[in-house]
Amino acid sequence: MSRLATTILLFGFLLFILFWRLDEPSGPLSRTRMLMGTVVEIRVDDPEPERFRDAVTAAFDEMARIERLMSLHLAKSEVSRISRAGEPVEVSAETATVLRTALKVSVASDGAFNPGLGRLIRLWGFTDGEPRVPSKMEIEEALVGIGPESLTLEDGKLFKSDRSITIDLGGVAKGYAIDRAVEMLSAAGVKHASVNAGGDLRLLGDRDGTPWRIGIQHPRKKDAVLATLSVADRAVVTSGDYERFFEQAGRRYHHILDPYTGYPAERCQEVTVVADSAALADALATAAFVLGPEKGLELLQKTEKVEGLIVAADGQVVFTSGLQEIVQWP
Amino acid sequence: MALRQIWARMTRLDRLIVVSVAFLCLLLFIGIGLSRPGETVEVYRDGELVFRAPLQEERTVPLEGSLGTTSLMIEGGTARIVDSPCPYKVCVGMGAIDHSGEIIACVPNRLLVRVVSQDESGKEPGYDLLSR
Picture 1 (cartoon, each protein chain N blue to C red):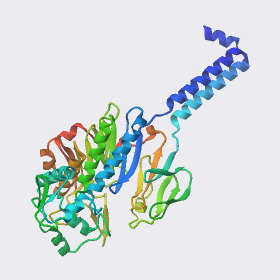
Picture 2: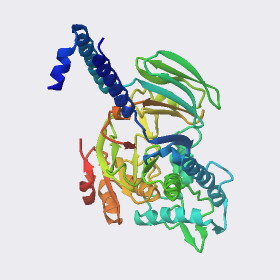
Picture 3: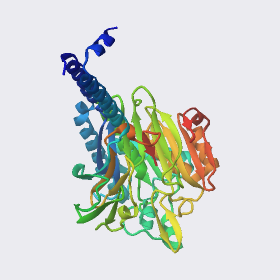
Picture 4: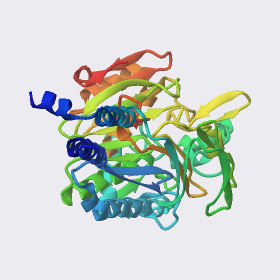
């Protein structure tokens, strides 16, 4: 073979190798851990994400710390201690912050979201024990004295109108843990990241110059999305009747309980809320789900810097006016 | 033209080799561009990767968790949990997964099964994250 042909051959081969090397992806750093009864995924999209490995571990540890502080299932947690207390009880600054968000939404929603629902939730067995439909009498007993004014926070002390009221911060505590994880990542210098706790999301920055595209689960089609939102630096939380449920005597009972009736709320299939914090988004999503499409939409509209969409029980979709700018329908 | 001169100086065999190599390179480029690396099943226990296998290799795998053995079945390009020592078997009820990003979690047994695609651009949905 001539020298020229050999040169061309070699050149072709080098080009091929170069192309191959360039093609190798340097993807985002993504890690998962099981926390708060769900799967939490933290993803860092910054260039050279490996340098933030320790920051991601610290963010997970922070979420685990908040779980230990606010879980109702851990007897030593602060929330368990508050729940047992009869007298006005001092709460840590951190738990007070979460309680304030919860109580604010409770008042704004006229009690549709209620952080004093622990007794009722335990009765239905959604979080521990075998889920079952309680008797009418049991439900009525669990609802006694749990109105929106039954809990007040003054000078770092929590006042309960009835000592048997059990606090369940549920989703709001999870939302707060997500918010704290994002703060930790941001403090470590991360610019583009997402924290996803079982579908409750908060985004740090944009993805890489473009907004994150967030699919909203279709409430009745497992493999489909209802809409896609383009968002950056915000929290997106969805509450749906398909998430956790059980069946008894041919009827389906889901986990979002209506504090007025004591039974699963029936006015919605799904609510998605976009807000600055995951804690607020979570409380609002639950409240709007209980209130239904009309009053729920009113609540979302009147809350500042909040957008959202509601799928009513009949499948009809309503949404806040500002959502139009960030939503794409399939 | 220099190229024409080069071409004229080549023997027939040289030309054959050059054309074949060029053709081969083209095929490889197209092959790399179009073929998606197979999807892979990963199993994590407490955040540690404990098992990894292509979704195309059929098998049943015993996975040790904190409560006991969970059985993972890989069949027909999908992964599902067929047996678990956890009390409510939510993980068994979650059915089969086959798309990149899909997850089956058995929280009581501390196991997480997920499908990953080595090629992120091969991710099929039109979104980055799913809110549910």
